[in-house]
Amino acid sequence: MDRENTMLSKELPENLQEQALEYVDSCALPTTWANFTMHAFREPTTGKEHIALTLGDVANGEPVLARIHSECLTGDALFSKRCDCGPQLELAMQKIAAEGRGAILYLRQEGRGIGLLAKVQAYHLQDQGADTVEANQKLGFAADLRNYSLCDPMLKHLGISSVKLMTNNPRKISALEGLQVKVQEQVPLIVPRNPYNERYLDTKATKLGHMLIPEL
Ligand SMILES: [Zn+2]
Image 1 (cartoon, rainbow, N blue to C red):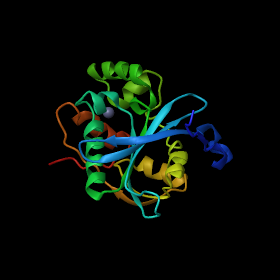
Image 2 (image 1 turned 180 degrees about the vertical axis):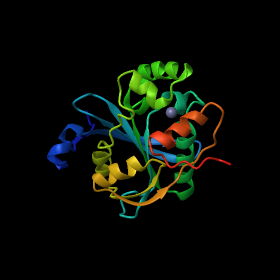
Image 3 (image 1 turned 45 degrees about the vertical axis):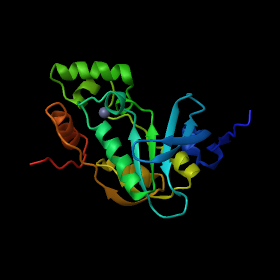
Image 4 (image 1 turned 30 degrees about the horizontal axis):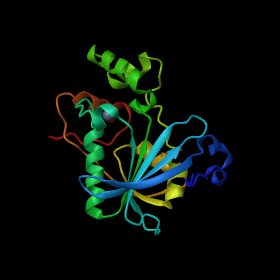
């Protein structure tokens, strides 16, 4: 029972209380590209588990090369070609390894927040012709249910107040700025298109405002 639990909720403003996170523990996570440190967090109200990976000294006040990555089991772990999540995560880890310093917040909000099983249903609707936004809406979900306020207690715990954010998604930048995290720079993460992710990437660009430059 030597595990140190830190409740971070008392540092948060009233309106973010429900996003309080409990820090559980940290360990080494050697990967193909670098030896990261993995930090574990839990939402006390829902029991949902989240992790952060860091490399180097991220708490020295300098802007941190960072990625906020929402879990995508199919893309991150099953090599799915239906989306760009896996290659984006890999590229972010490579860029952090090359810089020798950075952080990845890995948020467990599968399928833009609808959950894994609903994502299978949404993919089924897409197999029948719907795009990613229409499919979520047919199932009764908003186009994007992800909640980035979790980042606030995670970043505070890690001592990060300023980031160079690896993203193509302007919503993430405004979400972080809303949390008083300084986004010093936006670093695009453009990964290759394939016949299976083409329509998904186009929909993200046209309906969800992602800044994706099509390959010509
Ligand atoms: Zn994905």
